[in-house]
Image (cartoon, rainbow, N blue to C red; front, side):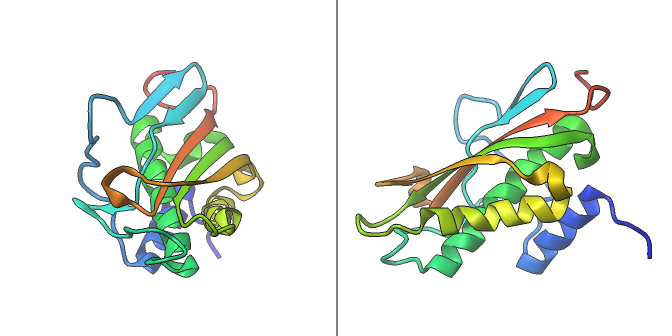
Length: 166
């Protein structure tokens, strides 16, 4: 059995979810999607947008069930990985996922933010193995851009020889 690259694993997960992240990932304002400082890369917050559509919207615990919010977190993580892949040339250029921040638009009594974030953490472990284990913050918020149910940001360490800006 041939082992798959991280890029192939991420593409397979996206296909399992029924989504593609080919084409441009448009920034929704006056910012850039990835900043690199030495070997550390930071992504801007990503909502569950596929193409031009935010595919999971509304308040978790009301209009959005837990399972759909978990899917939204996976889409957000895949968007971050797509941005990082474009910056580095390949996800194999990532040495370690350092931190993930997950924001969940939810009702006042919803307390399963960590279960929503777990879906992204599990995805990162599938792609990176132990290098995908990270520190994390998961918080509930009143509102997110475009009425997105979830927003996710990521910080990773690149391998010393990875990417065009090394």
